[in-house]
Amino acid sequence: MGLFITFEGIEGSGKTTQVTLAGEYLDGRNVSFLVTSEPGGCDLGKELRRLLLESASPWISERAELFLFAADRAQHVEEIILPALKEKAIVLCDRYCDATIAYQGYGRGLDLEVINIVNNYAARSLKPDYTILLDVHPERGLERVRSRSSAKEKNDRFEGEQLEFHRRVREGYLSRAKAEPRRFHIINADADVDDVFEQVKSILSEILGS
Ligand code: Z5A
Image 1 (spheres, protein in one colour):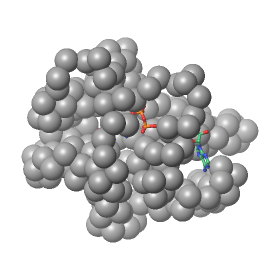
Image 2 (tube, helix red, strand yellow):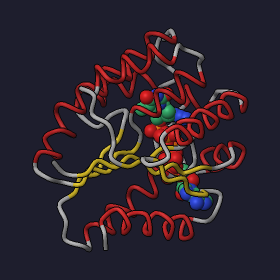
Image 3 (cartoon, helix red, strand yellow):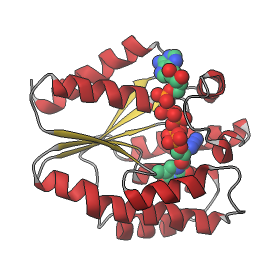
């Protein structure tokens, strides 16, 4: 099997930016890798992503939301992640199971035990080898996403949530990291892009042993 590395953090923590830079870094090192994301890392997931994120979607209950993210993950793991790992690739994934714990569990308040069962079933119990948590203050993260250009698809269903929601999500991530300190690497993502990437690079080189 290859190596499975996830990037997590609240909205605007810079995951997408850092996953892209991490991919370029691996590209320069001649290793086989795949950059992917949730929701929307496979064809079915793209449909689910649209439903999950567009503010024009029909009303989605909290439990339905949990199962839509799980459906995205089930397909993504089976169709994209596991085959790449079997080919011994390094898989860099922007959000995974910890996002469901943080958002649907801490953010929405759904039962954490139920979420763990749903996550494990959807993911065929596949856990990341390492998780890089980009920790940013929610005010800073939201400021970044609200001021970015409209080039990226707007994530209105989640962007519309109150600051308190994003604070709970951050707390959820930090408590996951505390519970699994060997898997999680926490990065101060309040810093500028280059400083954050220096931290990501040093973790990657430690993981890759060079
Ligand atoms: N979700 C869920 O509820 N449950 C689940 O199980 C899963 C997901 C898997 C996915 O939306 C939403 O689904 C997400 C959680 C939920 N919603 N929220 N919140 P998405 O994929 O569209 O959004 P996202 O994952 O939150 O990504 P994002 O909004 O694009 O944020 P980001 O990836 O962390 O940041 P970014 O795109 O790299 O950067 C955002 C802006 O900040 C951009 O203009 C950058 O140029 C800028 N930036 C980045 N880093 C920096 C630094 N260091 N300094 C200054 N500016 C920066």
